[in-house]
Image (cartoon, rainbow, N blue to C red):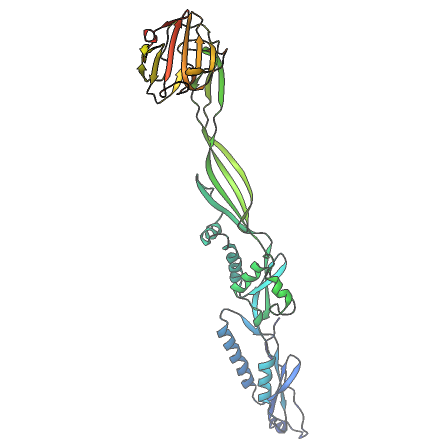
Length: 427
């Protein structure tokens, strides 16, 4: 415990007069001690005590909020003497030079290691709060002080906890006034990894300078939770049916994605995410399975005898008959945005490739005496020997071979003889 002012018992020196009266008439002096060291004698101890009070009052005024005392004990011993030798000047100089002011503090420890001396527990708590505020808003810390927050709503993220990676303790102590730290100084020590030095001044030591590059004495660990929604992909179920031809498909039931809510917990250390996990999953809307029908019915190679228009719309640009001194065997169809060429009826592909003036050409044998021809295609999507159904894509309208522009040349043959396509189809 730091020492206060003390006055010892009176020590009286006999002068041989033999009477109490003579003794009481001698002058009185006071020996002044700092701890056990005699620093001089004074006639007026009140002057010394006044000096001590004034110095203390000045220190208290300059260090408001600190509870101050002297580290050394100042004591007085009274004595009767024959002659007075006043050493007030020396005594006051000694008080000035040898007395040390001390302050009551809270010593902050992190992971058992002393860090700083703060004027109060409130200031020590402010240090920890300031360290945390480097990575979390002050408002969020205030909310946490009120208790554990409620879980976040959908679309919301909340800080659930802010802690430190090492234990923190506080202990009452008394230190020299020069060893008291401000909140700002203590925060710097924590963030720069500088525990309180145990020996020589860190500001002039090599180790002190190197300490500034160390890791912080403690890490700020933040736990947050987010509630969000995500889609649950729908499944696709394929069912085979003989109501559709092979290669054909049809959607019997449209699929629809479901929804589920997730509660995600993330952990950060000094602002860097170190862990993420989903702590809750709840399906709020079940997905609807898409059901698709897949045809198994064999495509007939025999035509129906009822032909369909072999293009997607369009107009006839040239009919069958004499043209430019030659006989035009079929009709020309052009003027379409969708250039898909379709089979006019069920049948078997007997030719699919490039043929002189026809360019890319497809011929279908419909198995009932009829054959159809499709010419000038830019590309062919079927192969020789393949069975196609009525309306199936054969290729894309083009201008290959001898052609004056993008169009389809279409012919119909029966038993090897030409027939007018317009007797069977129309736009």
